[in-house]
Length: 285
Ligand SMILES: Cc1cc2nc3c(=O)[nH]c(=O)nc-3n(C[C@H](O)[C@H](O)[C@H](O)COP(=O)(O)OP(=O)(O)OC[C@H]3O[C@@H](n4cnc5c(N)ncnc54)[C@H](O)[C@@H]3O)c2cc1C
Picture 1 (cartoon, rainbow, N blue to C red):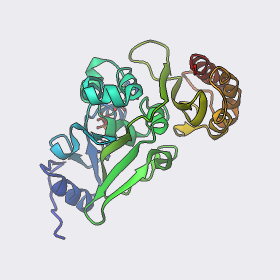
Picture 2: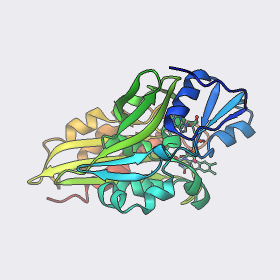
Picture 3: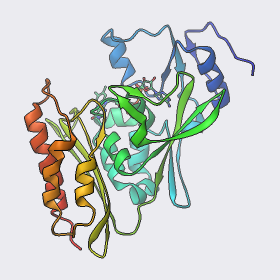
Picture 4: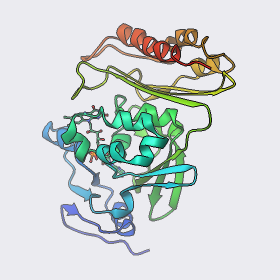
């Protein structure tokens, strides 16, 4: 493999292969997608990378496509692209709803799903939905080619993830909903727009003849990473629709919220259970 080495402060690849070679040759270069997170950090003096790797021209990272039972979303798909896509509206309505609550129109037009995932904020609005929908992330490197990582294994600690320094996130794969699947997204913030979440919920429950056979409950802003709730999920499986709401009492055992400038741990614990309880109560056989 021949590595392209460049002296330019902005590396501007036109193909994925070129981008991956530049990524390997220039680990100091920060990938730049829509820039809605990194420009804020730059202005605040939190980061000062010596180089940028501009991803914006990479068509391989754009677009949404349906293939059989899977929806593939390019990492550069913006929140607006996802919100307006007919396949996403049919196959992943909870993700569409999440994308429509990110910032406001300007941010949705520029901010990407890949940027939301790799920025890895515990408050990222799409992240609990990706957990609830069993998303799988497609990562590429020049040296090792493609590998896939389930969302549930991706965010490992505060802003630490299973992404090597020579890799790029290329796409997100979402399985189509199964028969009997019900999904939900709920963001609790200070305002309806331009609000960072105090609590954000993504959930999926599969009902077969009125009984839960599979459950996913995931939250953002209640721990150092977006989290699934194994105790709550286990309590839901086997329960009948109409008798699900009590499982929300276990949420407090699954999350580890903190007090910060946006909210208190106590409020977050209370609201996290309340929004789940409210939705579960609407599910009927
Ligand atoms: C005013 C404002 C309001 C906002 N409101 C919300 C909100 O309500 N909810 C919310 O969740 N977020 C919000 N955000 C944060 C931000 O808009 C989102 O996280 C957005 O999805 C980031 O995407 P981006 O393309 O701009 O990422 P960038 O800023 O370009 O990149 C973010 C990080 O991801 C890395 N990266 C990007 N793409 C890739 C890739 N393909 N492979 C590897 N690394 C990559 C970058 O190196 C960087 O570390 C807001 C931001 C602003 C400025």
